Amino acid sequence: MPKMKTNSGAAKRFRRTGTGKIRRN
Image (cartoon, rainbow, N blue to C red; front, side, top):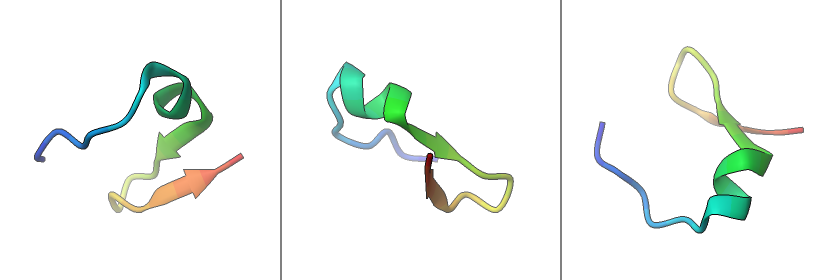
C-alpha cells in the first residue's frame, strides 16, 4: 500500500482495518 502523508500523531490515532479502511478510535 502506498504510504500516506500523515504526521506521527495521526498515525497513532488512526488504525487501519484488515480491509484497508481507516478506522477512528
